[in-house]
Image (cartoon, rainbow, N blue to C red; front, side, top):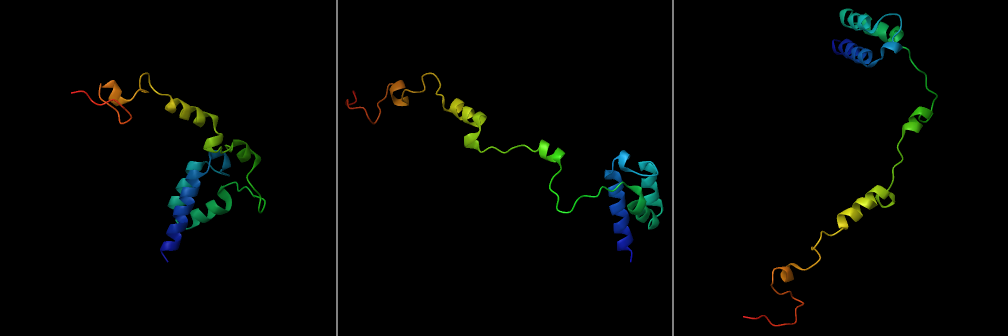
Length: 118
């Protein structure tokens, strides 16, 4: 018996805090917060019934045109020119990095046909 009014109060309180000032009706938002918290059972019911402008949505409607305009188009990595450019930049060798480390240090490499000198 105690949990249902408490849950209703918490729900109405959070709903009131998340509602913009323009969507509240009849009273300022801070007044609604005090009404919800002071009048424990009646306050949340009044808030849910008359405190907020409720926008009716059409059943089964998709995203609004505003949301569709803001949606980013996902691009696969192999079609993304910025990603492909970053791969090319990573692939570019540094100056002098092409020669084998064994030859640079004066040692021999496995492909070297000359016998080592001692």
